[in-house]
Length: 441
Image (cartoon, rainbow, N blue to C red):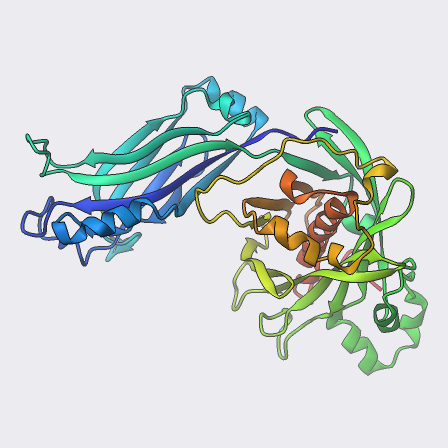
């Protein structure tokens, strides 16, 4: 099935250039000491903020100006689905950027930032970016002040805006991961089953052998015979959770296994950042599981309503952020750090057929973990998955960039990672709250 069309709007290379210090463009604010930032707004999307580097317009700063304009730094990014592209195209969309000097937020109840100017960039023919990159702006724009013959009284704002195709494979869980659901590939209004999930529990010996056998079933009958200390310990930790991804032939193609228990920190009911729970994301090789990535999760300090997470691939941190514990959000791996074009082949891939389950060389150690590094070095969007708040019904939707999928196992690994993040929301739930029966061992 073909991937879904997505478009990314990239905003970068932001630089603010003031007239010389002897001729400030606004009163009482010295350009070399005043922090600057901007608010970036796209029609019908939440606004984003970014810091803006500042230079002074004099002969000594000329080389700096050139370097800043060529830095290709990324300041903001908007991801558009096909329906969003169509909706925006019907409304003459535009990008609005408001530039401020001063600090964000309020000081003594007053807004301490001062508006310097506002720039609007029309985004015509947005649908064109589904097939090829479109550059909307790449250069200096005058803001604030009054134009003179030389234009020297105006501040100058450098801005690059481009849109480019970013096709993605989209997968949707048909139920909550702990309920062993099917996973569908989605393309518009069409969906087809591609994976099945099997949730269960593993013990320490299972993980040491890395056997590809199914997770063991819960042994609830042992609970009544536990001693009081064992009961108390079991109520203070969540361990052994495991989820295996199978293709439609029944072959295991990826797994997520909890390798570090989610344990309440001493004197509390919470999983702390100093002792996070952890998952290994695994891929098959020669009848055993080989580690591919590691996901850690915890609850932030104090009364924070936030779950923190970190994902590592070969000791390289690819994601390190937070998500609201009550409202949920998105788990995202996005390596876009510049405006340099990224190859995004618009190819199709049949996850439901056996022919897609391997690639040349599949089965060697280099195909698992190390084999994905060259793809990740292309940067760009890698994957995202929806995450519901703690205790809410969650059916994750997973998006994976086309350039990061060359076989079924690639896609399955990201699906397993999405499931691990979803289950981590429950694992991070305060231990004073009871888990649903599917998660109790």
